[in-house]
Image 1 (cartoon, helix red, strand yellow):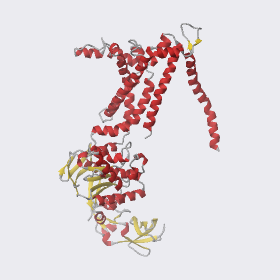
Image 2: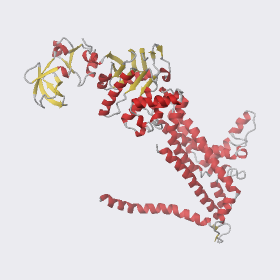
Image 3: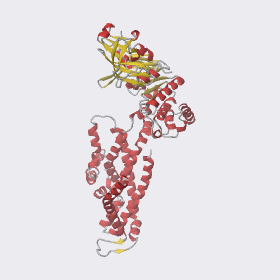
Image 4: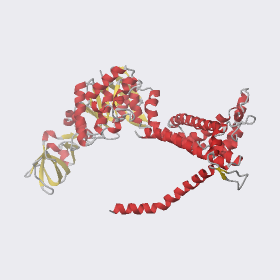
Length: 332
Length: 290
């Protein structure tokens, strides 16, 4: 079981309010991703759940029990740290066995569990090595191994992939998702990378300046962002925001249109402009178009769309895909 | 090609410095070696003669030698024990966020700046004096008989004084080592259910191992040659109770005017220091290679 409920939780460091009062329900078995720009309080929120920081006010319920004042070790949560936090003087086997040893399990049982975890994570050949002799991806797996042997109620991941190179990151992303499917344990995952959030999450929590901006499934956030912050944060490349006359025509202070929802044409369209940069990714082409009277818009087209710097193109937004926002940035 | 040339040039240009350093070391060493084979007494000038290993024989069979050897080892071991245990504890304390941290740290380091003769005299006259010392005053305050430190526990008193001087050094090195410990490791251990004592044993202490070896190495080098503290407090006494090898060499050469015997003692001390160094190097080699 791993149901976690936050009620009116706040956190202050001195006079700075890092987490504004917030409520959050995390159901058993869910993969929840906290995402937001750096300094938005997502790591602090994770550490509050872990018990590494004390809440200033509010209640944390784990499986229905008040865990606000429970020390971290007693919360049955396991955490994977950004730096992995492996114990450098211990072998991989000892690292993974450490929480079991602290729990006072008999040696035979510890050995069995360590072997099982190592097998799950392809670490069997490395059990006698020290962390210093492992690659980044292997270290990451040891850190995860140390977490899964405890059979915790929930896993907490604090930006676990940020120290890996791009190719490895994609791999580990898959592995963590597979691990979640296999274990069906609650996972809370902190990242600043919206791609990680979109690909892995059952539920995304978008945070900004210590506030929850929106909670929802990846597609909900993509389709119906509640405000300009979420709209701009989710989706890559970023949503285009347009104000002025075009927005007023649509009855809003500001409208947003995603690059993939702009129809491109060489002949005619609502807006026209000059291509400043075209990025060819093979499968897609991203065009940065300097539209007359509107500003720079990003548009996505298929990979074969052959335009170059300086060409004139025409853009038409798909009407039902336009997001409307009021003066406060809230979606209408 | 260029590197070959520049290497040759570099060797040529380094030569004067290397020769100077070599002379600097080899001349005193060979002179000491030479003197150690002579009957060379300052009271009998002009009577020097070659006597082979006689000086060594006398020095090594002198009952004072074994007393001095034991005292040296006790002194080094005792001071190392106090400074490392105390240093680790002080470092743990100083690592906590407290008000006025900077000033407290400077205060802790201060004893290291006091020169050995001065600190030994301060300890002797102001703390350990059985009549007017602070400790005597405290003892009397409790109605106890004051301890006459340098008569009753002379070696322990010296160990205390030297340990007081070296504690800041150990604390400083261990504190910097402690600060380089990744706090996430401690948090991970906390989440893994390790109570504070286990966290200290399984995370902090192994992390400090390297720094502790460095402290042991450096302190041993200096502690083998403790001299000033003994000279100004007990003068090696009572009897030979506080005579270490260094002090014995001094006594031999300059109190008994036997330069030959003193030189032999010096060579013995060099050999002993090398034996200690071999053990230390082994230990360090094991510890530094993580």
